[in-house]
Amino acid sequence: MSDIIQLLPDNVANQIAAGEVVQRPASVAKELLENAIDAGATEIKLLIKEAGKVLIQVIDNGKGMSTTDARLSFERHATSKIRSAEDLFDLHTKGFRGEALASIAAVAHVELKTKQEDQELGTHIKIEGSTVQSQDVISTPVGTSVSVKNLFFNIPARRNFLKSNSVETRHIMDEFHRVALAHPDISFTIYNNDNDVLNLKKGNLKQRIVAVFGGKTNEKLVPINENTDIITVNGFVSKPEFSKKKRGEQFFFVNNRFIKNGYLHHAVLNAFDGLLAQGYHPSYFLYLTVPPHTIDINIHPTKTEIKFDNEQSLYAILRSTIKHSLGQYNVAPVLDFNRDATMDVPYHFKDKKTPSTPQIEVDPNFNPFETEKKSNPFKKQQPAHWESLYVGADTTEINIENIEVDAQIVTKELFDESDNQITNKTYQIHQKYILSVVKSGVLYINQNLAHQRVLYEDLLTKMTVEDTSSQQLLFPLELVFNVPDINLCREIQLDLESAGFQFTSIENDTLILSGIPANVKQNTLQVLFEELFETLKNEVPESSFSQLDIIAKSLAKSLAIKNGTKLTNREQEELLGQLFSCKEPNHSPFGKKTFVTLSLDEIQLKFDN
Ligand code: ADP
Ligand code: MG
Image (cartoon, rainbow, N blue to C red; front, side):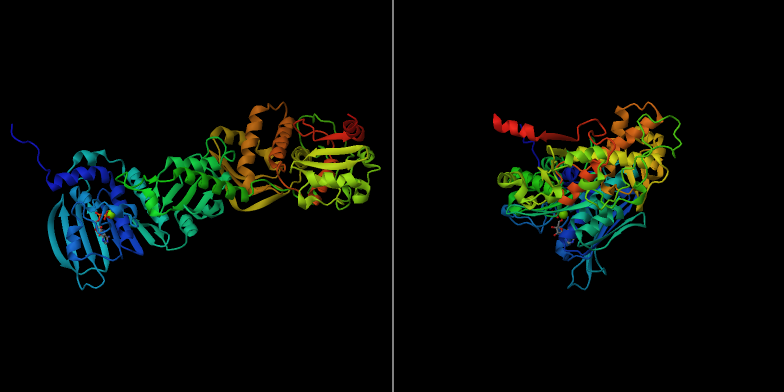
């Protein structure tokens, strides 16, 4: 039998290679943009027509090519970026495979114009389906322009396989964004069908992210910075309340190259654990810098998948860095000590046009807030029956002498260094309980549950009289939920407005707020509404009052100071004063005990046993 194996002609080999490298117009855009960056360009223009099906052109002001190089650049495996196999493990350029231009030229009409700085005239090459049509001398600016027309002209199956213009344009924009985000120090302009679509000026990383994704992005970002021996991590993650229903703005760059990596993605999600509502995704823009020899980019023709030497360590570092940064960005609300005058209103319903009778017992003469707020809450502010608790335990005078010696030992172990001031009247334990000495023993107050009670009565007061205070937002705030939740929100709009929320619109899946209650922090709103919708779905209101009551309860729960929050002595005292000014201080709005008492007898009993 005769031999049957033959070497494929170059144009066929190139076409086959193109199948991998050039999947759609966006792949061409990516390769050309990367070449421009590798050429050291500081200004890059991308022009597309008909979603790249008619034209994709990249013009750069980089170093250009000599005439010989210009011709060679279209040969397969022709590259100026690596010389030996070792170079593969020390890559500093985007390209290195030397097959992009050859592949593109195999499946399109390509025109190259290029000139180097020291050249008088440049080179102009036309090539169609791997066949050089012409090569001339041309007058052209320093740098390179590559235009790619009629992509897949010789592979009808591929051409027909392309998606609609809007889909293909989106793919191009995705690639453009990735490249632009990786290189904020380069200015980029994209023209779509001759219209100026996006002009990105050279700037820092944050400016670039904001330029690409819009002005509102700025307030949503938490900076991430970490420097270790094996990796440097820079960039931003979105604050949890700005997480999205759609996955989307999630970017990893390794040594300035956009990459996809499921494992590291998981590390980020892990860092957000417990901070995101079900089905929500964080945005992230993370720039990892690692020694080039610790990665292998060579595992995928489009170079978006890379292999790390020490993936597990990177996972751990990434996760803890992000966790740490999110922790520094405080999601917990703080106590509001600047209570305004509108809160000094009686706790009753007479001014409210409620159709049904309130179902809780009302004392029209009771005013929890009418006493002097500045005074010591333990001395004056509690209603009479509380006063007796503190008789004989005048807390203002507690000091080392009257606690006596063993108390010193106890306090050393029980309290933080900074709180180790025995002259104070209250103590915070484990950033969760407030300990207060009373006549008959000791009170342990749960700070979260206590604050829920305070806020609940406060909100109910606000919601049941006409006058409420809300803070106007500088910019309307958009929150996205699912449609049933938005419908729910529309049903309770009036009640929410009576609590101090102001809505610009409640439509489809979005509500837009123009004002929020005075003591609510903007960055807690997403979670606050989610919790509210959850509570409303679980509790069936029996009357319009109980609906109001449910809303007050839920808001109180969301806004209450969380366990784990450190309180100053002043805050502790203030909270206790407010709690014992409440109508029903013993229980949280959801019926849990707000505090427990340990009597002197009970304490003594422990010593007796
Ligand atoms: P690679 O980028 O992997 O080297 P390409 O096929 O993309 O392979 O490009 C081949 C070579 O052509 C590059 O190595 C580079 O020397 C040259 N080249 C391509 N585009 C440009 C450009 N815009 N400016 C200067 N040189 C370029
Ligand atoms: Mg290249």
